[in-house]
Image (cartoon, rainbow, N blue to C red; front, side, top):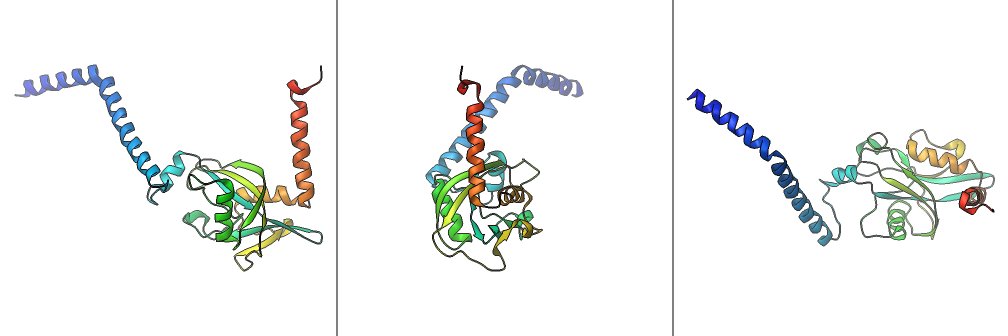
Length: 219
């Protein structure tokens, strides 16, 4: 009996070793078919993911995230609008942030900025331009993956919400609880002293980059 079991085990190992690649390929194909069906269901559901799978999806695929940049000039003070985070990511709860969110599939930048601004600023906005992009470092800077932040300069269409959780801050008043990634951008922006100087420098840098390219140099 023991000999039969040993022989059966040896035979099983031999069969698995011979057909391992074929079995592995069929398993991968089966998983791919299941994933395809799930994605098609998501498309039919207007791209709405269930909250249970959102963290996994965001940790697998880099979603772009609109960051609504609103500034104001009060005398010599150049200020940026910040809001306290009140969403579903525990590590960000209560921190100060530039208003933003993961985008919802099928929506434009303007639609997403206005979704964010209605929710956090209390009004809609006009889009000026994307002034900066920033890919968050996976596993270190964001609890749910590595979104690509699009910093979109916007102009409010009405009065913005101002209270203990929504306020304008100058460079020397940035709160301690400001998200480090957003602090990086805010300090860069406010360091120019005005939105005009920030945009001028951005345009100047872009022009210099174009002219410095070997293909654009005069012979």
